[in-house]
Structures are given as C-alpha cells and as structure tokens.
Length: 284
Image 1: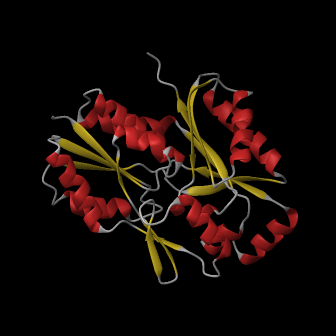
Image 2: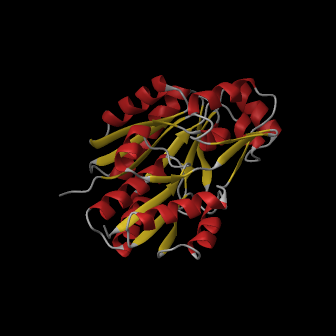
C-alpha cells in the first residue's frame, strides 16, 4: 500500500460515522469512577458516560491510553503496508499521551512521527482530519504534519461550560469562585491557547450572550474568509444549534461537522457544555 497512516486519540471529537468511514485509527483513553474503570468509546459510550456523571457521587478521573493500544495501532499500520505513521495527539500541556506515544513509537515496526497537536476536542478533530486527508492524497510525513500544524496555527477553538463545578474539581477555579459563579449564572468562555492550554477568555452572564460572543470571536478571527467548522456539545443539541445560528449569521461555513463531546473531555467540561473549532477553509 505505502503512504502514511494517521493515528490520533479519543480526546479528538469527530462524528463516529466519519471516523469509521475514513478508517482513522483512534487510541482510546480511560475514565474511572472510583474503582470502576472504562475505556472511552470501547467499554463506555458517550450517553452512558453522561448518565453516570449525573448520578455519581464520585468525581471521575481520566488517564492516558494503555501502552498496548499504541503498540496495536502502529503494528496494524505496518500490517496494512503503510510506510510510516503520523501519531497526532492531545496537547502535552493537558495529558501525558504524547510522551507515551513517543515511548512506544521508538519500538514500532515502522517509522512513527509523534506530534503534539497542542489541541484537544474539536480542534484536535480538525487537525486529525486535515492530516488524514493529506495522507490519503499521497502526502509525505512532512506534508501530513504540516497539514495538522496548519490547523493549530490558523484555527480558533472556544467552548462554553454550563457550570464552573467541573472546572473547580479539576483545580481550574476555587470553590469560592465556583459558588459565586453559580449564584450569578456566569458562563465561562474557554479558549484553547497557542501553548496548548485551556484558559478562561471571558465570562458572560447568560448562555445566549456567551453563544453570541463565540460567534463574534470566530468572525473576528476569520477576517471575512470562509471557514471549516465543527460544533461539539455535551448532549446539548439545542445549544449546538444556537452556536450554528451565531456562526451562520457572521461567517461563511464551508464544511460543517457536529459531534458529541466524548467522555474524556466531558469529564472536565461537564454536561451542557458546547463549543466550536474553526479553521480557514482550504481553497482549491
């Protein structure tokens, strides 16, 4: 077969049907509720995760993939006669997944280029999709990596969380801040930074205002150019629809994707969250 295979991980939010149709290799992370551990997307689907999250008295935790998942993905690529792998993973500032991928890449049966995407969620999904399409068009390892890095360099990724409680549990805000935010119904608008961290960009008093600001920020970043976009949500389709309406009012969207926020990212943003990642559309 030859060519380059793309491997990513389950912090990448892409529609399941699209992942399946492309044959994109996704290495799963794990989520645990106390002593009960599950493999995201394998032994725990997204709706079941949110049902458990809503009723569990224990805060879930997440962990990087088991080393065997990387070994299997790289061996599978070799068995399919690929010449090399680009292994594109969630930001090293948020997870140890990149470090583990590099460790297993050194033992792989074919050359593996591990890339810290400095992204997560929908932004990682867009990067993985760009990398896969470049590889499918016969791109070299260098070209595939460049396609993914273009998404990071030119993209914008924002997410609005419904409550500060899950951020508090993750140590991003204090208990006092979470209590005040809840009383005031403050909706933090989080932004993925160039360094691969997730930071509070601003706060809105209502969800509607946060959605409007999301559309405004995306439009400013687009500068009048068309974009490809993915809207992600934690089982909140009505909020996804509102984000689409805000985008459509301000910017031309070429490719439109929508996906649920999976268990790994969902652990940290909580139910009701919704966000968008955009990248300038590639012109023919």
